[in-house]
Length: 282
Image (cartoon, rainbow, N blue to C red; front, side, top):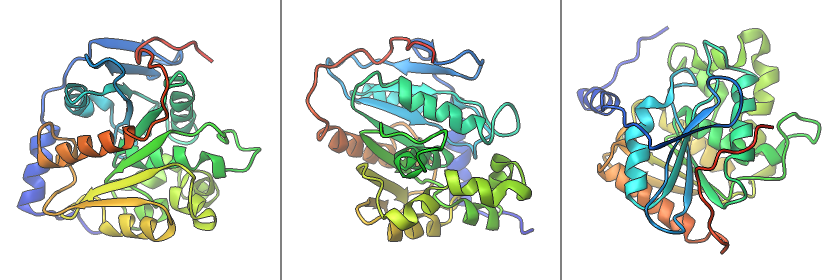
């Protein structure tokens, strides 16, 4: 196993962004009974603001606190923002609980509103997987015909086999799927690239946005997915690393907000509703 080596630029970016002080949300809610089945909400002051649901990264292991500054930033940019927690690898989650929770999030929290499902890194993997749930066999526990209005994947992990091969974050993909003995079978249900390979599209408007200087996720994760997804929109930010996409006020984060505005502009017209009412438990 080779040790991960990153440049001084990438190390400073990672330290700077991940050391930002968490921001307390003004609204909290639950979508289930487990302690991790909760969400934070930043309602916008703008009437009819578009809804964004954020899925946090952290290689399926870490909690959502590092993304709270970015969620608050997006609310300042005119979005209603929901940041849910979910059961995670190494604790109460992994396969299938992490996927159960994320499916429940997108099936209940939007409350019928159009929305962009955005995710960073492993959260991007989960967002792309949500877009592909309609490609799952009808008998799958996660199959659905109710898909996100749009998906914005920020520097996402798109290929679990490559994530395992490259041993990203010390075996994170193996841990997510419960070890080598289960990996191939389970990957078929939860890997965006595998689900997309035959279909060529999820039918969900999808944007993949990443920095050209990303040293956390290999660029092949982005290019290989783009080669299979025939109607994907790809945005590449020159000189941008992995973490400045979620750094409030940074050029990368401004590009994310601009992309969200463009995606929301194509939402179907409807009467807006509050983003922060607590949904009924299923």
